[in-house]
Amino acid sequence: MEFVKLQGTGNDFVVMDNRDGRVDELIKSIGMSVEEFVSKVCEAHRGVGADGLILIEKALEGGNDFRWRFFNSDGSQAEMCGNGSRCAVRFCYELGIVDEEVRFETKVGVIKAWVLEGGRRVKVRLTPPTDPVPEVVSVEGKEFYGMFINTGVPHFVVPVEDIEDIDVIKLGRAIRFHEKFQPKGTNVNFIKVHRSCIRVRTYERGVESETLACGTGATASAIVAYVKGLVKNVSVDVLTKSGELLRIDFDENLKEVFLEGPVKKVFEGNLSLELFLP
Image 1 (cartoon, rainbow, N blue to C red):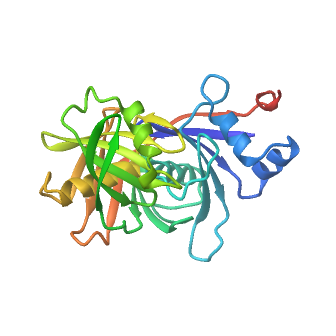
Image 2: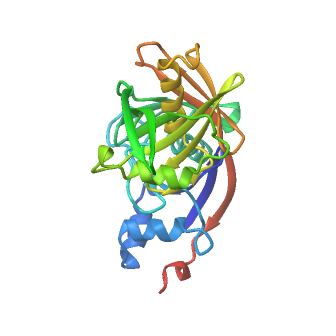
């Protein structure tokens, strides 16, 4: 079974063409659930290794180019993924099923995207976020004053002073499972203004660890930084853990929100059935 691995600012994904149902047929033939299949493929060391897996499928409505199903590395299906959407667009562009302007279907609605620089960069228009809500969360004997916002998936964004030394995994996990965000939990972003941009470190729900980047998290962080007066412009550069930049643009009413950044193809391959044997 063919796949392509792509990454956007260090957020890496396995992408597979399922327009004819071939992946569904494979999963059925090996007697696994979709969740088990995804976690096997995404597992580091034993599998391909990735933050998520994307299935490209036929659009359900005319005028749209394709539909996707997005899965976190633990096999859970997510409503949206910013960097994943950019990688999916690059995949479909190279497959020849989309042009430079793209419309595709997700669980949160139709996303519009633009292929830039021959696919080396992709820009997506995200669905309008919810209004940021102030929250105070107490974990590990500390209080974290942040804001909760949904940019396609839920995010808690908290400004910190010691972003370099903060224990993202320990504190992020504690906040992610905090009772205030149950039953679904939340992604967690620690941010700090850094010269002309903001630095972000993200604990991702579904990956259950810190990732090198998170597109919806970068978007949430940029919006919260603007709302809190930490940045003055509605065009914000976000420095991710990978050291690469994402550009977030939005209007003051948060009705138009855009995420732009680099996309790279890492490699192409074929899954061996041995991967799924006991």
